[in-house]
Image (cartoon, rainbow, N blue to C red):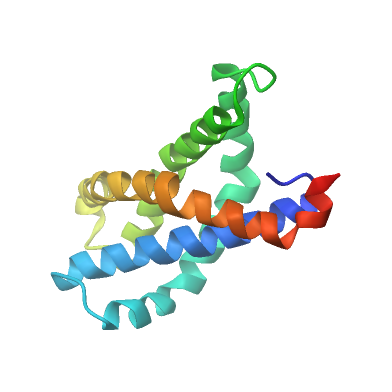
Length: 157
C-alpha cells in the first residue's frame, strides 16, 4: 500500500484506469447487447472523462471516508493485512459504484429528469456485482502487484 502522497497518487491513477476502463467496457457491452472487439476501442472515448471523475472522487473524498470507516470496523494493528485490504476495497466499491453510476447516468444515459433516479438505480444495481468482483479478484491484486513492482525499493524500507 502507498506510504507517501506521491505513491498514493500513482496507486490511485493505476487503479482508476484499471477499474474505470473495465466498467466502461462492461457498460458498453451491455448497451450493445453483447461483447465484441469494438467495445475495447469505444471505451477509450469515455475513459478520459470518467477517469478524471473517478480520480477526483476517490482521491479527494471516498478514499479518506472509506479508510475512516474501515478502521472503525477492523483494527489495523490486530487484523491480518488481507482483511484490511478486503474491507477497504469493498467499502470503496460501495461508495464509488453509486457515485460513478450517477455520473455515467447523467453523461451517457440521461433521458430526462423524470427518469434520472430510476435509471441511476438500475445502472448502480447492474454495475455493483461486476465492480465488486472485478475489484476484489482482478483489479485489486493486479494493481497492487504493479504498484509493488514500481515502488519495490521504496516499499522495502
